[in-house]
Image (tube, rainbow, N blue to C red):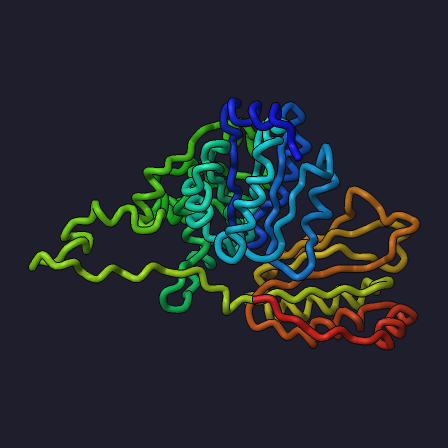
Length: 384
């Protein structure tokens, strides 16, 4: 239990800056976090990571750059904007008494998160709001794919997460601009300005930006968020409604309120595959090429940590967004005593778990493949 002196110190200290980092799957959020942790060493930053996926891959990619592993907090039981909002409150609550150890806290949301409920959760809890101050809401947008996500048709009554992420941001990092033409970039900028004309838009490659423009900038404006969503804090704004905005009807009777759109992930699922042994490079490349040729539009995000035959102790990191795939060596190799377990996560629509699992196992070299096929299969679980 914390001492009373540490509690008093936390309560009397200025609020700790809190940055919300959003962006659709594969936009470059984890890359930005790693860039921040390696580019600057003046500030000690606590990172709260909320990942959507059966297997946590991003933890391995972020901890390599943390000053202390205790500075990384995982929330991987669901999406922070809906199913685990209580976890976010408990996580921040657990940081209150030791928040003076940090110069800032950053929340990396899932790529499917709507930032509005996260903002509401932080600002409507008096204890949290007394200790943490939202410094900025930073949205990363993939210049190559953001237009398709903004145009995606959602079920009736469901929000478009990509639109919400752009709308509620006060800083937008238009990432991967090297993958689009100048004309395409101009069109994307115009599209973003049509959704959010107040945000400062920064362009980037590999999430590299001037950190002074996204950290410690005090750019969050809660009033603008309420303008975007009058129901952000429940029914608190009802008293200010007018006849024009459905407060009262022409006869003085209260008009029916528009139903609030919900965060619906029923069309999206996650499939995680873990296999022990060495993957055959040509087989894996062929499998991925065929998969992307036929299913790229449905694959929002693919990522993994891989072990390949003939590559010594080099550990490979695998990142994909739709048809764009990147391979590269991890910063740390496989340790001599570390099991060679390759882990891959697919996030998208209409995923065939059995096909993906069997296909990855078929990419193992002969000895490992035989071992995997003889191993008992665990009952499949779908994450929606």
